[in-house]
Image 1 (cartoon, rainbow, N blue to C red):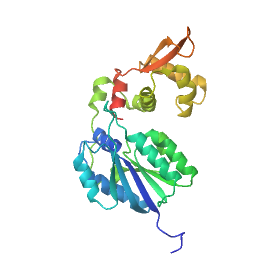
Image 2 (image 1 turned 30 degrees about the vertical axis):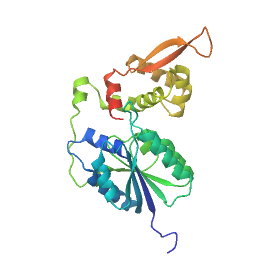
Image 3 (image 1 turned 90 degrees about the horizontal axis):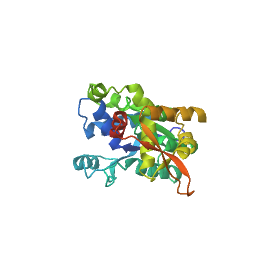
Image 4 (image 1 turned 180 degrees about the horizontal axis):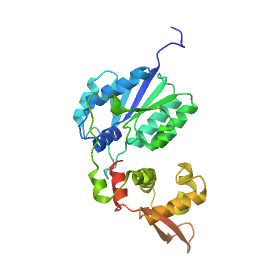
Length: 272
């Protein structure tokens, strides 16, 4: 067969913690792992032929899901244990292994990434540089615009064999949280939460000049980004404090902290 007409081989990388939680957050019906697997197979078949699909997640908490996945041809699990604090560790492991697969010899032609999180933007960009096409399969209601601007989105809802009913967001009604606020701050809160888990403190200047610029947070100019940070402080999403500068004795430095008691912050972190 001529290489120009051969079937595209697809490898799927599935952030099961993301897909499972987003379906639960947004829809009343319980979606089974079988139904999700079949939906992923349908999406892959529209693009080409599924070669392998790997589900990432802590399967010590969902052993029955693991057994169902292992029984299906071309499907497998990658067990990622949660941290002792209970924090999900799926993203860093999946991102590392996805990036490795892009830059090493591989048997696939394209990638089906099953997650809607913005954390995956950088691997998608790297795949594009290497000439590898990436397709996104995620819960359409929650898929990050940053991510879907980089690759075509296949909303998983359209490929499930059951009708779905959207939930009323009771927490939103009780706290006054709006979809617009959630969309504006979700990326910011998630990134700051991740940095706080790795560093003893987050210097305001470092976050403003390096992190916000790198992740395209808050706007194109430093003035825009500063205004965005001020809005976060005024909305009590973050607090700003002065601490002793460990690099310059006798001097102070400004740090920012995520206000984890803020209802909006709580809701965003609960969905991670």
